[in-house]
Image (cartoon, rainbow, N blue to C red; front, side, top):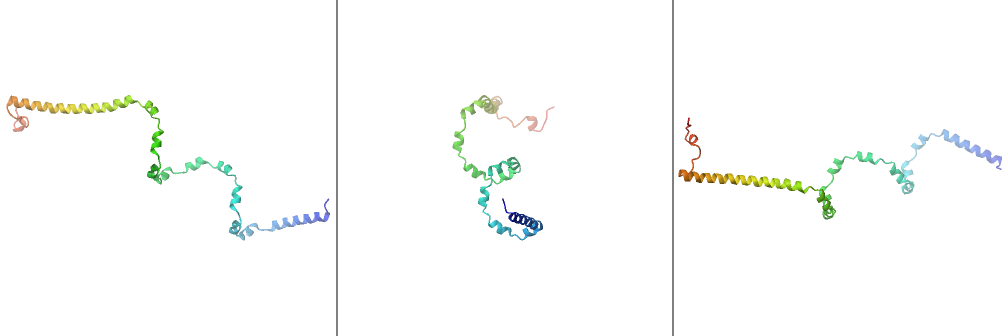
Length: 164
């Protein structure tokens, strides 16, 4: 059992504290507090030890953060030359599965399109040579039959008269 005087003293103390807290203007009290001095007394490392970082990270919406990033702005700041200098091209080339790449490639179509272009160019060259040879033969036949060089154009056009 507790002494009745002690019990009475306890009740009086609680009542006195309640009256003081109710009469106290907390805003006026906080205006008088130097927060920098209070913060200087706080050991942030001890505070951070009590933070549950994984739980904090789980609350972060990564999608929202990524959506807010201006990719064009980020890429404009990247030095592509410096990035490429760091790339080991030998390792990249060695990682390519050439057999799989060849299997997926339609070599027939590639050969047909490239040889078609080559054949077309060769045909054009042959035609051009044939035209030159035809002119050469025509000039020699003209000389053999007519006995001299060919005139620069039809007679009607070169001497100014048109036959009717």
